[in-house]
Amino acid sequence: MASHVDEQIAARIAAARLKRERRRQQRAEMDEARRYGLNARHAAKLRRGGRRV
Image (cartoon, rainbow, N blue to C red; front, side, top):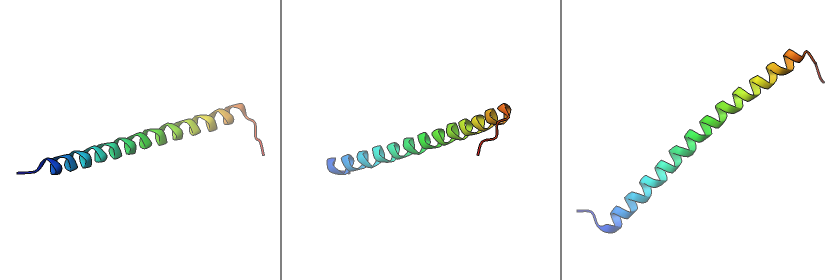
């Protein structure tokens, strides 16, 4: 039988794991949005036809 302390520790570990997974998912979503935004920005520049140095 697990003690109260063991249960608390297990709960904290589970919470930390969930928090880490959420952050990882958020980072993946932001990376995808950033990639999409950069591609859209590049395409817009090409459509304008301006070449800047």
